[in-house]
Length: 102
Image (cartoon, rainbow, N blue to C red; front, top):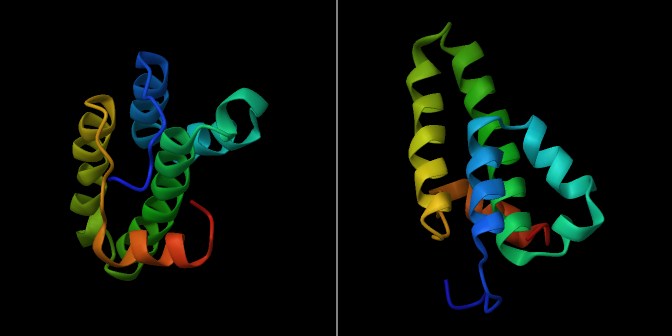
């Protein structure tokens, strides 16, 4: 995404991957670390992974487990983060941006 112009390091990519694979725990850890929370790429993936995971858990609970397939998307998003890409999730990304979280 062109709105984020910071350089993405291999460390950023690794933390982005971990934010998706171990969401929401690593996402919260990233947001609590002073040297990490100010990195736009990391903040974007940490907040997005937390929001997506909360929504996925709600859907899974309401559909009595049928929504568990949605959680497999975490792996896809983790791969995209490790490749240095920003993931756009239709409703969630817009919501997170409008709230000013990323």
